[in-house]
Length: 244
Image (cartoon, rainbow, N blue to C red):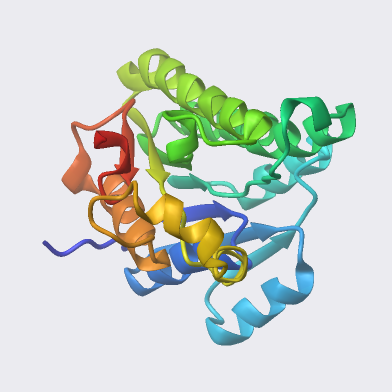
């Protein structure tokens, strides 16, 4: 199955590193004109050096108005990947308002804001479009001391279903990928301790954590015309974690 995005413009948030960088890079290889959005300008500059065709925008997703203007400046856009995310391991008794704002401002508030501006552009042009939100297995199964993260990703899942219903008649598709632990640079550092990794691995029938390429492949499929009848779903990329 060959997936191509020639003639399409794609916006990827959180594109400077990790899964977002992998998605942006592969979209460009598949012919899309990619706009990479992130807070980290130095990392965006490195991505631009690697793939000069990629456009970059540095913006803080916590800033509603600045984000709105940044997305408007990138339009017209045909494909959107809401990848940027925040996570902290905290028990409920450790949660503060600052923790809440840090996670929810990026994980769901920014997703709503970016998606809203993107769909406004599609409606103005009477154009179809596709969105993929990077959610998590944590939206569908509780993880210890992930109260804020689990609830923020569950909000993403609910938002995705609502948008799929409201804008499907306009030929706008929206889906989630829900990965397990992914071996980004941060993931490798955090999960290198066997005391942490082994209990989690024991719950994954395929016996391994995800690689960036696993998530990228799922995202590209859901963005592509190969998934033209797929909308409003959560697509686990979890090695069977949620089946147990």
